[in-house]
Image 1 (cartoon, rainbow, N blue to C red):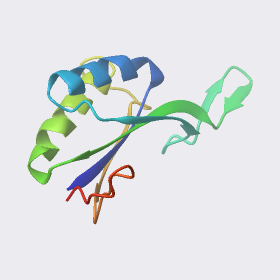
Image 2: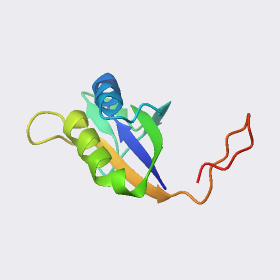
Image 3: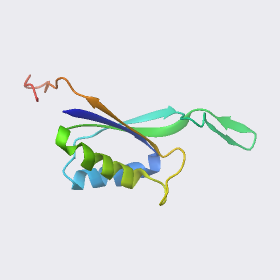
Amino acid sequence: MLMVKAIIRPEKVNCVLSELCDAGFPAVTKYDVVGRGKQRGVKVGEVFYDEIPKEMLMLVINDEDKDDVIKIIMKNAKTGEKGAFGDGKIFIVPVEAAYTISSGSNEL
């Protein structure tokens, strides 16, 4: 199993979540996060913002679903046809184990 962590623009979250759910991936954890990428923040006039608000979506999927999930997130989180700085990142991490707290069962 794999954990997908996607950091995306807040205005793109509802669309991404809707498309993931429609494709059979309803289980998602969402975090409000702040950070910056390679651009090291944004300067607007005289004000410099080095902590940009983003959302992190986290979901655990089967290995064979990785390409589908990445395509869904990229398609729906991208700004315009070509995308833009600040659209986000997707990280894929192996999951060693997962347990359901209420039952204690191992999900893998």
